Amino acid sequence: MGYYAGVDLGATNVRAAVADEEGTVIATHDRSTPQGPAGIAVTEAVLGCLRTACTSADVAPSEIRAAGIGSIGPLDLAEGTVDNPANLPDSIDRIPLTGPVEQLIESDQVFLHNDTNAGVIGERFHSDRNPDDMAYVTISSGIGAGVTVDGNVLSGWDGNAGEVGHMVVDPQGRRTCGCGREGHWEAYCSGDNIPEYARMLADESQVDTALPLDDPDFSAPDVFEYAGMDQLADHVVDQLVHWNTLGLTNIAQAYAPIVIYVGGAVALNNEELVVDPLRDRIDDYVFNNVPDVELTTLGDEVVLKGAIASAITDGTGDRSRMRS
Image 1 (tube, rainbow, N blue to C red):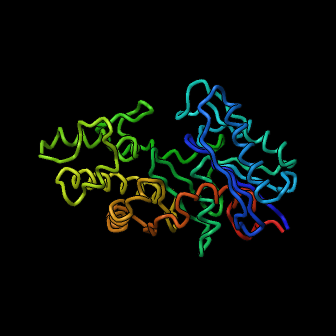
Image 2: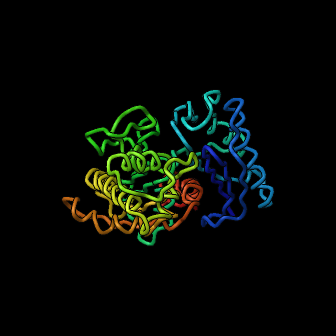
Image 3: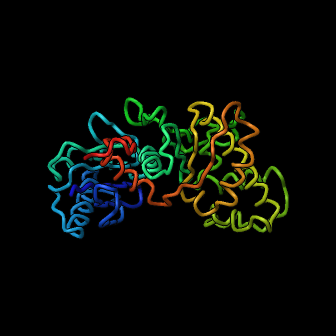
């Protein structure tokens, strides 16, 4: 039997899994992502998670035929590293990944992807239809997408394609994104930015609201919790649907996916308010073939399962390319 490994490296947690040749997970291990003192600490956390998952599966690391990694970015595919990750301290300037994992499993079959590309690989592998043209969009603390066109995962020359959260959806630029540019999709609809957007809309509309706007702990879940009971919350949710529809429309027009899967904490925790309205509205915006819009079938394991699928299918998610 062949064994495969997957890693999901996020700014908050590291998860690793060992799976069989069908992609069935045998063992997992997770831990918090080190916040320093340097990138090598994160590398060691990844290797430690892999070793522990192997021990739990009673599999030696050298028995792992291939591994996939879904990671925060930005990536340097040529070097197999994460360089200056935005959501980790500045002291973590470079995180070596591909080389150390290759040494651990004694194989050069290690596939590094940004997390949303790992997500679309996972969706493709586990989809009943296994379409060649599809997308995975995460709406979480940030916004990003993974896309396959004609069966090819669009990674970009450096591994950083899919930064759709930095598409301009508002030409008036009323909100400044965390990257410093104005009018970006992420500036309105990501979990980290929804609270400030709600405060902006409150100032514009001057409606009475029960939302705890002045509470320093005011967060995106508060907006969704008050939806249906508060006029401002309803207005914010409706505007989020508007911007999300524009974002998905841009993806549909650019890449012609048959289906767009939507994941990330904001979508997973609020399907009726975030995903369901997109199905109703996107038909009014897309010029040609309207894609199906579905909540991810893989929940919050989409990146980890995509990393495993990448290892099994040479980085594609295409079941016809599963290793024999």
